[in-house]
Image (cartoon, rainbow, N blue to C red; front, side, top):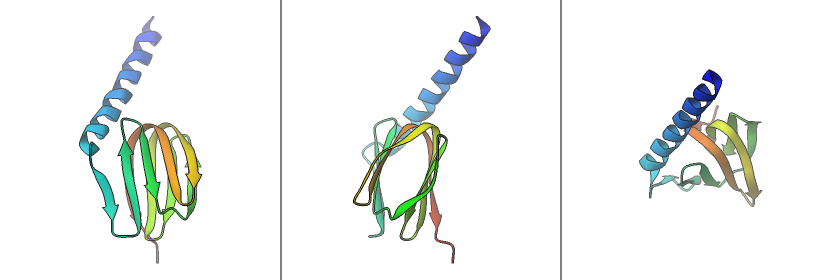
Amino acid sequence: MKEKKEKKEKKEKREKSSRGLAKFFSDRDIDVGSDFYAELRGKGSIAVRGCIGIAEYAEERIGLRVPSGTVTVTGVRLICDSYVNGAVIVSGYISAVILGEEQK
């Protein structure tokens, strides 16, 4: 019984975090020059255009290479839904989007 309650609390916490991130980015796009473009779609999906590769792929972390560095998506149950012509869609319980500069 206690396990069920703990699972439910964890799920609610993930959903609350996802809702907060979606609210913060609602109707907002991230445009970092002409390098790449990212759009948070709803609670659990992000589209990134201008990718030149996937640097890291795990269920909790997906790193995308863009010309100026990286875009790292962290969360739970992340998957790369599609990757076509430099456009990537990542979905799952997104907790953070981290922009990193290219290492010189």
